Amino acid sequence: MSQTAVDDRYFQTERVWKILLRIAPPVMLAQLIQALYNIVDSYFVGQYSNSGLTALSVIFPVQLIITAIAVGTGVGVNTYMARMYAFGKKRAADCTAGTGMVLAIISWAGFAAAMLFMMEPYVRTSATSSDAVADAVLYGNIVCVGSIGIFLESIWTKVLQAGGNMRLPMLAQIAGALTNIVLDPILIFGLGPAPGMGIAGAAAATVVGQCVAAAITGIVGFRRPPKLIVMQKYIQQIYRLGYPSIFMQMLYTIYIMALNMILAGFSDDAVTVLGLYYRVCEEKSVIKIFYDNDWGWKLVPELSTLVLYI
Image (cartoon, rainbow, N blue to C red):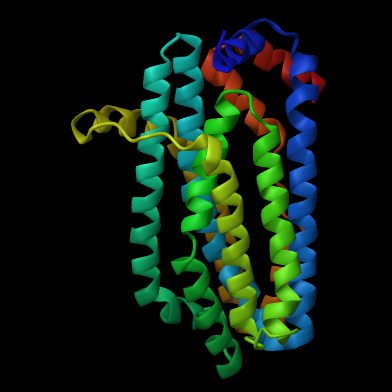
């Protein structure tokens, strides 16, 4: 019997608390490492320059937009795949995964191209000093152009989670975060043979870490895209299920952007403090992944039970 079939039966028949104990710890550990990365990244950039730290805060909403599009699309892929697995339609689930990868590449290309033109005007709404503006534009351009990693990793992570594989995404996120943490001081300050790149080094470390995570998840999560003529129906289902997640994250992003614009009228330091607060305190829902799978299986009673456990 295939692993997919085992996972299908597991989610449909196992008790909620056992499923929760299986899927929650890997995600919690991965998010703990991610939170540590946010702190370490801010520390090294802060050691380099105050304007670099301001740049992180200014570009943080841009990174949230990337996450909103990437993860929101992944949620749609995850939910529809889980539903197809429940109906025994593995081919349709694979086509959904392949379509999600194509959407990730298109989203990355469109967003990166748009931000190359919009980056400096946006930065000037949230930073005033010339050093902060220059650092933010440089950091933002590198992060956006190199965001292909997070777009693909978000899709492939959800593909794996749709089949109950929580361990590989955890290992991928940990590997990506640790890669970022190790590369930060090397590329920022120029340790060993590596030249000191300053804020560009911090951005490069972020991009490399994301690509490492994407490569690991892609080993198992990659699926061949379906023919273009049949891809449309999968696109519709993916965004029908994923747009609420994208929309809610976008609202949160707009809120932070508005705060940055207001605080920029006082000083760059005010923007920096707000950015540090959100980078350190940012929390991602662990339980939401279980929600995605349960809703895909249409197990509404189990969702109610999960709420009681929370």
